Image (spheres, rainbow, N blue to C red):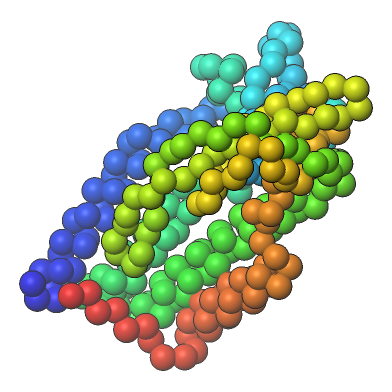
Length: 281
C-alpha cells in the first residue's frame, strides 16, 4: 500500500472514530454544558472502583429539592463534607458532572486532542491551508499528550499520599485463591496466562474483615501466607496493597520524560526545531 493510500485509510479510520465518539458521548455533553444548572454540593462518602479512582457521593439542592447522587473522581478529589461545584443536567437531576470546565471536558480533550492532533498533523503535508502550520499542529499534539498523562499521574500520586495519611498498615492472611485468565502483551502479540486473585483476612481492633484483592498475581500465593495491606480509617472493609504505586524514582523519571515531551511541543508551537516527519506506510 503506497503512502497516499495509507494516509487516506488513516483519515477514514480517524474520522469514523471521532464521529462515533461524538454521537455516542460528546453530543449529550454539549447539551448538558449549554443547558446545565450549576449548584453547590457536599461530599459525603467515597467508594473505590479501580485503583485510586471511584465514586464520590454528594448531597445537593436544586429547584427546592434535596437530592443525592454520585460523581466520578480520584481519591484526592474527596474530602468529607467539602463543598464542590456541580453541573446538573436540566432534564435529569441525577446526571451529575464536574462544574470545572477542564474536568467536565477531560475525556473529550483527551480523545480530540490526541486523535485530532494526529489527524491534522498527518494531513498538513497534503492540505495547502494547513501546511504552514504543521509544526504548530504537531506541537499542540505533543502538549496535549504530555499534559494529559501529567494530570493523571499527578492525581494518582496525590491520591496515594492522601490514602496513606488516612490508613493504617495491617498484616493480612491469604485464606483462598481464585484462578483467572489474564492477558500479557509482548510487542504486537498478546498471550494468555493463568493468574491468581487472593482473598485476604485481617483483624482490626476486635473485628475481623475479609477482602478480595484488587490485583491479580502471576505466582500463586499459598493459603496462610501473609501480605501487608493498608486499611482505610473511614471504612475498615477497604484494604489496599500499595505496592502498585510507582516508586519515587520512576515517578520523577516519567514526569521528566513527559516534561521533555512538553518542551518539544512548545518548541514546535513557537516554530522552532525541525518539522515533524510523518510517514505512514
